[in-house]
Image 1 (cartoon, rainbow, N blue to C red):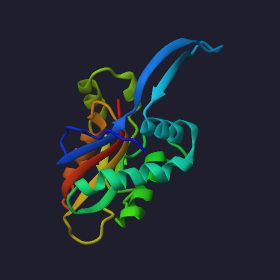
Image 2: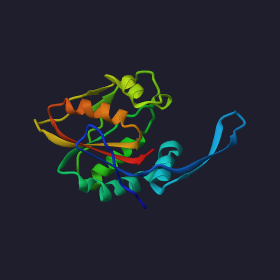
Image 3: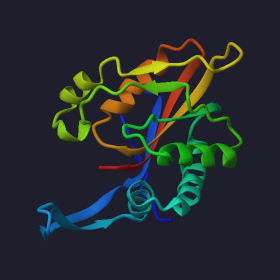
Image 4: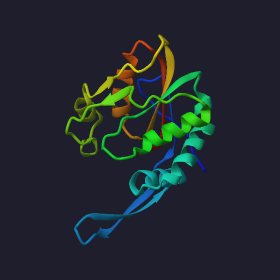
Length: 193
């Protein structure tokens, strides 16, 4: 899989993203129901992420997790646990959780799926335009469920699918940083916008 790793700035110790999501997107008209249609060209990672997240192609989980394991995971120091970013939309299967699980198996690191919780606040971040608006909408939306036995502290890797302004990741990392069993926080995303 072709990648172009980029640094992701935020309130974590180090953040990396595999590749840009889309190369171009051209408006081509409207559907019969009036929705806008676009001809979108995505990177290889962007297309795999899109197929997983929006088309339910679960065969993309393993190659995306393997790419994280090969290209990003070794750049973080002594990761003790992996945490998937909690989903914004309820689904029977969560793409980010599936990628985090697969990554955990590959690198033999435990994945804590219920450590970081997100409460619904009724505001869709995609409808907000500025990072400040997103930060305000995310206030107090993440919490920690103490599911780690032992005292720690451990370095944690937060995994997400898309990095844009970083508002969600920063709010999640603020919650993680408040947890006494967490030391360093690393962030990895599949794509950036």
